[in-house]
Image (cartoon, rainbow, N blue to C red; front, side, top):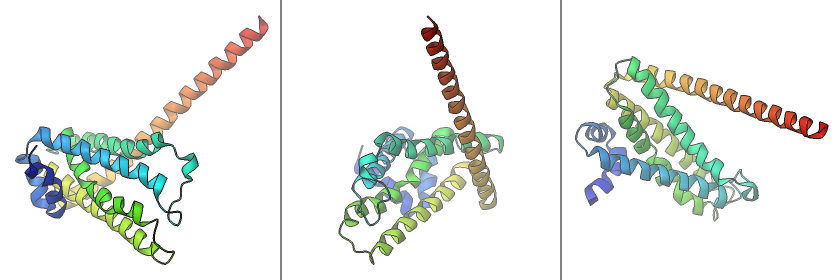
Length: 208
């Protein structure tokens, strides 16, 4: 992997229209997929480290009760749900993007969350109460930057108009909510079945 491919994600976030066009039509799909997994891994690492090592003025988590697996889930599940929901809807709406295209464009859009938030993990330990405003401003800026990139990436990958892209994104969010509801319902049902089997086993054991 040469330097051009390593720096390509930074080109995409700085020149999203040209970058996403090259991402879909001109760049090496396999290398883009590797870069996407790399960005996702860095975001997971940033999320875990932020929960564990951010300064007490901005850290809402108690490090003693921090679960790294849950922090990983908070990154992977939304990305997976978004890709599945967006792919399912755009397939019905004549979108040109494949699942791999949606995944890579989504991961590239998450890069600002790493670039902006990672340094603040350490800076948050030396800032004062008055300076926490800069922390929250930078976090908000990173989120808005990623949303903008996600919008441009979705529009370019599927070759949609801006208005159709907005509709698609809104429908994708609704689909994500529906998927989350079904997953919660499924796990709740599994838990009830396990509880029933456990109680039944205990009853049979005690009677014998």
